[in-house]
Each structure stands twice: as structure tokens, then as C-alpha cells.
Length: 441
Image (cartoon, rainbow, N blue to C red; front, top):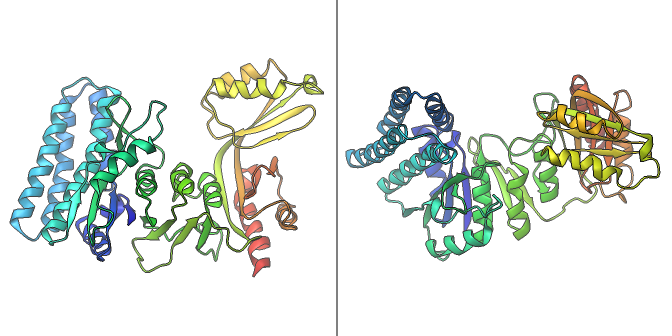
């Protein structure tokens, strides 16, 4: 069995839904995870914003506009009045439910219930369309098995226990449709997976059913070895180790959130990134196999970075200094990307500066604090084990004419990271690409 995920653009119109159904109807048993139709989640957030501003009437009027979009999609999708009527009835039930919610006090739980309706609508429409075509399909309810534990993380044991009775792993040609992104929390209230959304649903289900492969279908041709908007002659990366993928995802590649990789990595379930606009393209395979040892795979960049430097004579030969510094960031729930230390100071980078003023006030108790804003992390990803000679020197050579604020090497076997000014990003990416990839060719 395979698990396939399709995002909002893949089910964003009647034509796109037809393409997806044609693609998945290949006679193989699979679980298909669907996002909400493109634009729907943003519209539902706006619906909730009306309620936040105390305008229930405005929310209901706005919902009518969104419902009209679904009516047009239904008209174009179904060829028989029976199924068109069934789809309209189901969608009307959901919008009537939304209008009922509009007159309740807006809470965090209620807002999550509102936003969840997008996935419920898309999966119902696709399942009905497949039934119209005579395809053996079962619509699952993700609230029956997708659950968060008390710490807010997915409860994989619960997911496995509750999904397995609902699917027949030995069935021939059976297709199961499930909602992505949505779940329940440990209290039984509607919630969502937040980071990675429907991709996370797919990898969690893939791990739970021990899928042969998880496929993430998008409108982008896999991960590229560089940003094609900046560097010419980029090419898709055909294979990545899970660790390499996580580095790329965190440092700029927009296709897959690093959190989504973890369930597949832990169970060894291969993940393949594929292009709905070009289904025959090879895409990118991500697994635990390290092919082509010693190869650099890609370069990624992450903007919006702030560097914080704490310099203190007290650090010299002192223990406990780093603990005090890190506790400040922990107190203000701000994660650190890069770290560099010396005998008299420590530099770190962060990508969330909302609590920066409070952090600086606390750090000034321990030393002199310097801030550099508008920075960018450039990450070189590949098999960079320290015993692989020469890669770090080539990367350094590429940066010889570019001011580098920090360098991180050795914390991972899969990346070298440079912190530079955002204004130097394009020059750095082009120089690294020319030095690393052209030399390899």
C-alpha cells in the first residue's frame, strides 16, 4: 500500500480534481490524503476574523460567496444530476453548519473547527466524484484516527491502533480518501497538525500502515539543487537522505516541512516528491540510503535571520555561562539556528525576533550584546562527513569575496552553514553553485 498526498492546488478546480482522480486510479490500493481546495483555508480564516470582530452577519454573507465557488466546481465536476445533487447537499450541510457556528462565541477550539471544514468539503467532493465513476473508494474520517497527545505532538501509537481496523491492506484496487491537516487533540476537540499540515498527515499514516512509499504531489518538480529564481541552470535533486532533506527543508526548500520527515525517517518509509503538472517526471526520492557518498546535493537559503552576539570577560574559563545564555532564549520560547563560541563570547542566530528586546535585556546582565539584522543563512547540503576531504575548503573558497558573519560546520554530517547579509545572498548562492557544482561536472 502507498500513501499519496495532494495539496490545495491539485484539487483547486474541477479539471484539477479530474486529473488527480485519473492519476490515482491505477488499480493499486492506496490512501489518498487531500488538502482543502486552494483558497478555502484562507477564506475560512477570514470567516473567523469576521466573528472575532463581532460581525456574524458579515461572516455569513462572506460564506455565501465561498459557497458559490463550490457550486461552480460541482457544476463542472459531475456529469450526472444524481451525484451533483448529492455533492450540493453535502456542501450545503457544511456551510449551514458554518453559519450556525457564526453565532457562537469565537474560541480557539471553534476557530479550528471552522478551518477544518475545508478538508471535509474537498474529500467529500472527490469521493463522490470517484463513486460516480464507479471506482472502489471509501471516505475516511481523519478525526477517527489522527490524534495529538497531551504534549501537542501526533500520537503515532493511537494513530496506528485506530487506522489499521479501517483499511484493508490486502485489498486490490481499493482507494481510501482522508482529510489532511485536521485531527483531534487529547481532549477530543478538533485541532490541526500545524507544521507541514497535510504532508504530516501523509507521513504519519505511511508510518502507521507501514506503507511501501509516501508520495507528496505538488506543482513543483521535486527539490532543486539551488534556487532557480537566483541561479541559472539548476536541476532537480533525484535522491536525498532523510537528514539531507531535513536540512534543505529547514534552510529554505519550501516543498516539505522538516517535521514531516520524522515519522517516515523513524520507520524507514520512503518519501517521493512528485509533480502533478508532470506526473511522469521522476521527482525526488527521500529515504535512509546514502547514495553517492561524498556528494554535495544542494544549496538552500533562509532569509529573515537575526544574529545575536554576547561578549563577556566572565566567560573566560567559566562554566555555566552557556547554560545561562540558552536559558534566556528558552524563557522567551525562541529557537536558535546557528551557534558559534569562543573563550570570551558566543554568537547565535534566530529566525524569530518577536521577543528580541526582552532577550537583549536579559543577556545584558551577562555581557555586551550586539545585534545584526537582515541576515541570511546559506546552507550547503550533502554527505559532509568530516573525513570527506575538500568539500569545506571548496565552500570556503566560494565565499572568499563575501563577508561572512558566522560559519557552522561539524554540528551535522550533512551541512555547512554560512551567515551573511541578505544583500549578499544572491552573490553567495551563485558563487557556491559555480564553485561546487560546475567543478563536480
